[in-house]
Image 1 (cartoon, rainbow, N blue to C red):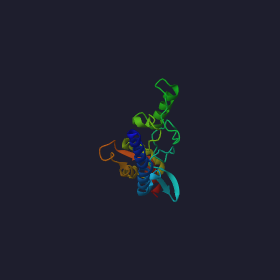
Image 2 (image 1 turned 60 degrees about the vertical axis):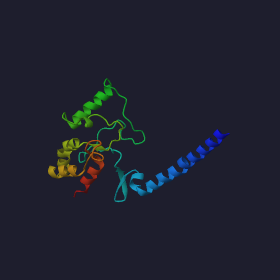
Image 3 (image 1 turned 180 degrees about the horizontal axis):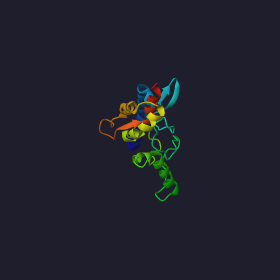
Image 4 (image 1 turned 90 degrees about the vertical axis):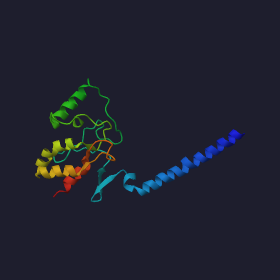
Length: 178
């Protein structure tokens, strides 16, 4: 009988902790950080244009391009393809990407993102696109290079990861140039 009473007490304690207190703490945290809780959405002139957490497909020559997506930027069905090195489709896709980005393109611009949703590219991948973007927009390359530098994020907490550039925020900053 003692074991049953202890089990019921444990059930009640964990029900209160995980069924009431934990959801309450998470809900309060969401109120403290509403932008993060709502998906880090970016709005321009009252219209949602994207999220800083997910890559958006951008192919126009006036814009910086994100890394390729194996999921075709589908946020509902993220994930890489399961194509191996002998896949004719993969060989063709890589050849097309090499033609698009050039023979000296960073590997990230040739190989698809593991999740298919990575919103960042390396500063090197952004620098490689500066000449095209500046030419298409008819603005000095130095101005575009400075914009890339302004939008280069440091590693997380200064130690985790590599420097990176969020493609959506960089493209929005480009659009803001008049």
